[in-house]
Image (cartoon, rainbow, N blue to C red; front, side, top):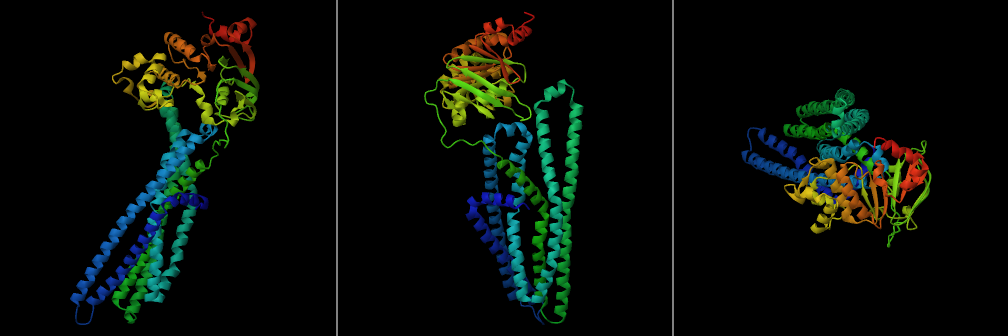
Amino acid sequence: MDKKTIKSLLSYCSPYKFLIISLTVLSIVSVIFTLLTPVLLGQAIDLLVGKNQVDFQGLFNKLIFIGVVVLIISLIQWIMGQITNTITYNITNDLRNKVFDQIQVLPLKYIDGTSHGDILGRLINDIDLIGQGLLQSFTSLLTGIATIVGTILIMAYIHFSVAVIVVVLTPLSLLVASLIVKRTHSYFQEQLAIRGEMNGFCEEMIGNQKIVNIFDYQVQNEEKFNEINERMHKSGVISQFYGALINPTTRLVNSIVYAAVGIYGAFQVLNGSFTVGILSSFLTYANQYTKPFNEISSVMSEMQTAIAASQRVFALLDEETIQELSTSKIIENKQGHIVIDHLNFSYDPSKPLIQDFNYEAKPGTMTAIVGKTGCGKTTLINLLMRFYDPQKGKITIDGVDIEEMNRDALRKMYGMVLQDSWLFKGTIKENIAYGKPEATDEEIIEAAKKARVHKYIMSLPQGYDTVVEEDGGNMSQGQMQLVCIARIMLTHPPMLILDEATSSIDTRTELQIQRAFDEMMKGRTTFIVAHRLSTIKNADKIIVMDQGHIVEVGNHEELLQKHGYYHQLYYSQFATE
């Protein structure tokens, strides 16, 4: 087993030391009473086979005592089960919270480059496997070890030679189990990796089923799914085959131990070395001694799956996260003066994107960014928001380098409306107030009116208390976008970023929204990413980008008069007008 993984798991157990200590004490007490039972049974048997008489009173007293011991064992095991469940669910809860918190601070580079289904699999499925496997097996391991040690000591005390037989044959069982475990671990790792791949594929296909149907891609998807499923099937069959070998092989070895004790003990009875009752006790001890091995081997497959799942979870937790400076700068009097100085950035070092980019946006000005798809428009926005950091150069706001600022404080300075609108499952009121939870109903309604969505909301049966389905399933794309715009209008940020903010809205509504935007942009530094060039005619400056470079800068009229790149873009878009 991976020592680092086990050590990491143990660190999550430390807050529950008292419960673990209590569980350990109860396990020892349970084992003591369990080991006492065979002795009592042996004594009861000797009362039955005494010469010429049966001690009925003594037998009755012994049976009563055995019954009390069994009840105590049952009560202790029930308490142990409750404690184990408490420890298990608390640790899995802590792990899930930790993983979710980790996702919040992972760089976008990791999120963009990793299957979302795989991340969800680690957060949900893998942590469940940890709870079901390793943690639920904790009691079996603890009780098993105590039983093995206690049984050996008692058998050695009663008859040393019988104890030697048991101890000599035991390593054979452990050897068989360890050989199989080593063989199976890699298969369990492979199975979980394929499961993560399948989660990602299914999530992608289900989320884009309309596109799949439009392009009649169902057959190809089935073939791809079958290929992944076949790999999972093969890996699962092999891992479960080897995992299933552990239990019967260890049981075979343990049965040999039991038979050896029985045969040797029978001869000792015939020789008069000990009584039938003692032989019965020895056979029970031999069975109790081998039982922990059987129990451990029976959960070995789950334990291997849990170890593999733990490795995947801790690999995610070990990913490098976004680190904030201990003395991050905060701008008190925000003006919105943005300077981009010799900026260089690329997602792939071998494929340069933005190179030596220089620009100054003065407070209260509106800058539009245009260019062909892939020219770097959205990348520039990502850099402004510090979703990514540049390889060279810097961006300053009011003279402060944004890399010296707290990311949360920086992003609160911007109001951002994206091309892809996003609403979560909750009321419309909650969605609008997402960036300002303390907002009053009056503020929310005012923001909705400015976004021209109040009338639509009031037409709904529950008005602002109408529940939005996941991803806005019960709203049109345009209506979702209007709610997202109202969300930004509510926060009154000092700077704005509009990334195709009106792309999903009809022309008439777009004109209304544009008026609201014009009002909202007064006195605010604004960046607009646009494909519809008709929406940026009033921009103070238009940056025309191509392959990460600025090829032209000017206002609408100046750029048209140059008859350059912007002129070509503009008239190719409106050639039919």
